[in-house]
Length: 427
Ligand SMILES: Cc1cc2nc3c(=O)[nH]c(=O)nc-3n(C[C@H](O)[C@H](O)[C@H](O)COP(=O)(O)OP(=O)(O)OC[C@H]3O[C@@H](n4cnc5c(N)ncnc54)[C@H](O)[C@@H]3O)c2cc1C
Image 1: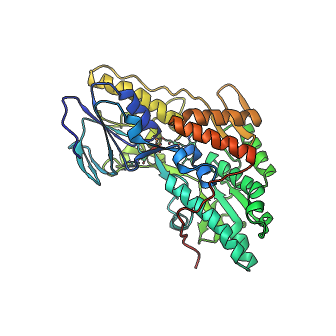
Image 2: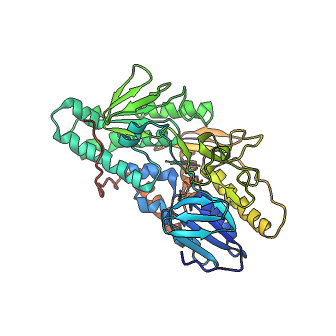
Image 3: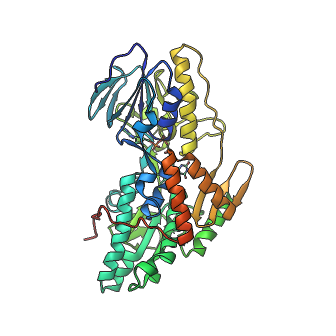
């Protein structure tokens, strides 16, 4: 990998996501050698992926070069590499570009889509966890409308214009709201020769309320907002199979749709060698102690989505969200320096800053630890928070300008099929 040996201890961070970047920033200017490995050369701001999928933002405005984050940090090395295996005995990693040894290792690999073993849905459904996946979804949505124009078969046309989003968490809710706005504001103008009123947006949730991790009032309000936009919200229904058109569920309800978006679950992104059963808990997350040390290892740590730290306040681990990842990264930054200096480590204490979701223009729900509010003010708070946490000044400016433009013009101009997507269709 061409990384020089150094007299400083080597800390390898796998993953330049929210946790990995927060940790790297904390280690800048310290007497350690830091090697950051990621399979992408950019950091992804996942909360805005749905806006890329729906043409509201260009992908470059929510991705940021990892090398730029690390510019000017002495003793920092970035390598574009996928880590394939961790040899915990030899303290070595095997990657697609070679091997490298570590003194301290931090696993910050985040999570991946969980299809719960359903191969058909994995193969024929759409996920929205990465920039390429969001671009695929954007292309598919637009290609479906182009295709709908060409067919005389009403049945086929309806299936092309029906969207089924599985999972009523923030991702599903935000995507459903954005699609409903496209249906209302853009489709009739872009496709005047197509009866786009027949387009259906269905949000399917397995439990009895959407946004189950938020307050009841947030769930109720979000559902009301979605329905006011014309989204069909289906609750207590589990999607069980998909052949590319027909969607079966565990009830009598079924759907026909050329686009199923799977936003119904994630599992930790583990790496071979550190995935023995005794190290994992629900969702494949690595069991860590209050210092983020992986159980049984003094020199291996895990942070963010991939880590599960059970505490009194969070007996099932912290939520798989950006804030816990960033806060754990910051705390671990201090702890790694303490470890190097043989000082006692500081336990991680999560400061819950609340959660939020937007349904569309002027419509959002916000749960703060002390206040809960919904509507226009919540929407402004949602926008401000997302702009604040976006990495990169240029990205903030571009996103802000796009939002103002889209707000004033009721538009989403990034509806471009740059990279056509070939979907596996039903036979
Ligand atoms: C669509 C969507 C919307 C979301 N909305 C919100 C929201 O509104 N608010 C919120 O708080 N959270 C939201 N989240 C969740 C939030 O993005 C995650 O909780 C957060 O990204 C976790 O941070 P992390 O550092 O653990 O992992 P990530 O940010 O996912 O970073 C993991 C990094 O590891 C890299 N990686 C993985 N495996 C390997 C490997 N083997 N080798 C090399 N590199 C590897 C990946 O390329 C990635 O860069 C959303 C997530 C999604 C998918």
